[in-house]
Length: 433
Ligand SMILES: [Zn+2]
View 1 (tube, protein in one colour):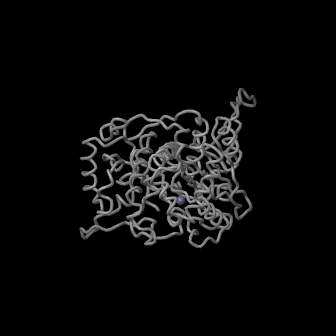
View 2 (cartoon, rainbow, N blue to C red):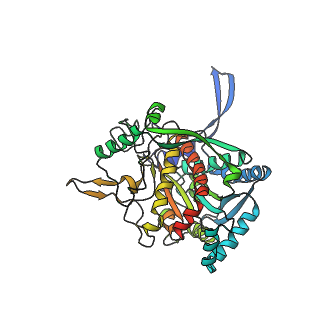
View 3 (cartoon, rainbow, N blue to C red):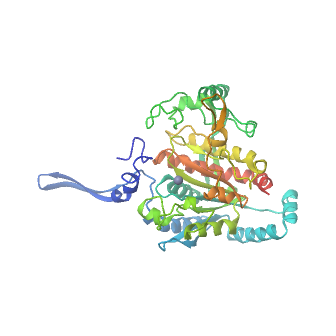
């Protein structure tokens, strides 16, 4: 029922929006005529890390308690109410409470006296931590909710420890040659805007046929471990939670669109697509999210979506909002995007390639000229594009399937991203200020 690889983009109303009708506890019985020989409770859900709306708020409270018990700080804040009156919850996770207060003081000073704050950042006089938002807005693109929940669960449970995972350290020579070969085959080239910054990591499909989308040469590829090792130098690494929280803090909003999540659909209680409303802010949810973005001025925001044939990680291709100039952000944006995508593809079983619009969507047309396939940067109606106006390096991610692999891929990419932002916090601030 849920597709070859889990929930996907097919028949939204019949398949994705019906999930909550079938999810839950069932009684499984072994019956011989009228006699019940054995029985047990079975939990039926699309995949292991699937979180229905009914458990989100309680789980966030539980996560906060675990975090505080383990010596970091976490607090659930209600930052708004949905159109149907449901609370919109964010979990703040920081090294301690004063991190949040000190950041707000710094934020205020940065507004009133940016020169002096910049000087202190440059000289290393101040010890500052920067906020990162992870969220989901289209509730029936379930790994968006679930990956943020799984990341949060891991973060708090390992708050006094390190979390092991894998990263791609570099491309092998064979990998570099393969990227050029596949670019040629698929008729793309890198634009002057990014050619000096990108590596092409993740573009390799090695001719693998997509099970879900046969014949599609962009669809996410399921590569073997042998193929991955041929093209990429993969290494084991870990993120020490307390060390990471010396540089960043998290604002985690697994479910911005709570009315939609309650019934597993895309639109809010008024039938609006919230991810077209950020310019106008007609809906309570977009108003609340905008207020939170303006209150906290996050340096980074990741909003997780589905489902595209390819696993897609921004930054976007042109046309780009002229109010945010490329030279301010593009270098760090492509590096951060490649770090995200490359981590995702080596921390799950079957989603082992990704595409990036600004890198991979300059394509040869029928006349042999290169032309951009535009993706999403032209309008501030999307939350990430809107948040650019607040100086946020923001990304939309499109996972290819709703399944455990997509959830785990994004979970580890979100983790590595926290570490990445911490290690690059000064460059990121420099680039966006
Ligand atoms: Zn979406």
